[in-house]
Length: 385
Ligand SMILES: Cc1ncc(COP(=O)(O)O)c(C=O)c1O
Image (cartoon, helix red, strand yellow):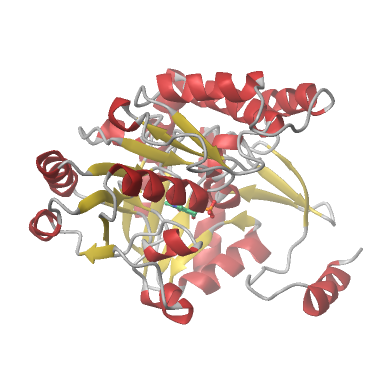
């Protein structure tokens, strides 16, 4: 089918909640994508932070192949080895507690909110302005952004949004607080690392009042910032983290991972999801997690992140670069959405704009030096245009 035919089908049959670029991708390998005409693209967006290991990583593909013909689904009324092994690996690689599986980042937020509320009944959830925790009602209620929330009022009660400022956050936490929910590096708002002072203030306030500190690592986790989890670089240990996006190596899975304190809050019947932790996605995620939890790969993320940052800082029209590892954003003095379109259609470089002047780069963690230089060259040409 031609692109024009796909666009016609979209017009007649797809609810218009996405603004798609006029490109049809048919194949991916490593940091590269190909469209239906055989044109090759350099992917510095990775889905949106999903294909961290590159497209179709052979070990993830092999894990899926081995599982998919053996057993695709049974309910969570039974055991499967991939789910149990993945939970064990996730727990050992992070907070040492227990795991609840789900299918997406938003569902991981929902699980975190429910768990915190069960631990402190009727408690409030404190979130920070600019945060993004997902689009379902609980997650949306934890996402204090007027444009995303307003059309869908009334929202879920019991959320309080504060500025990303230590004093304000401390003042908002008291004996009625169930959780403070934060992204250590805010992704959708344009890659804004929260300050160490804020994260430490959140830890102290939660400790004083017995509230749960939950870090949303859906975007900044799974190696993206140069450590397996972003919290490892902050000096603050949360009581739970959420993960999704890159966890499945390209397949949909999410998880809430607790530390010891919150490990046994849920009892049978409290929370569930039909497809959660299914054997195929769990096998893919186990492979993805093993590949990502690798000192050499994580060192390369830090090194190439520094190289990419330095290269971006040298380009015309880029005013500032921020982020950590390979989770980066640039402030531009030109329109970011137009630049993203030009980069895609003229230079075959996949990027994304998080605001009118903010460009986001989420290249695969397996990217090489030559690909970083190639992306910088393609971006320089797009910026000239
Ligand atoms: C930090 C964060 N949390 C939650 C979500 C929601 O994830 P999903 O789109 O898988 O529901 C996202 C998605 O961008 C995210 O960046």
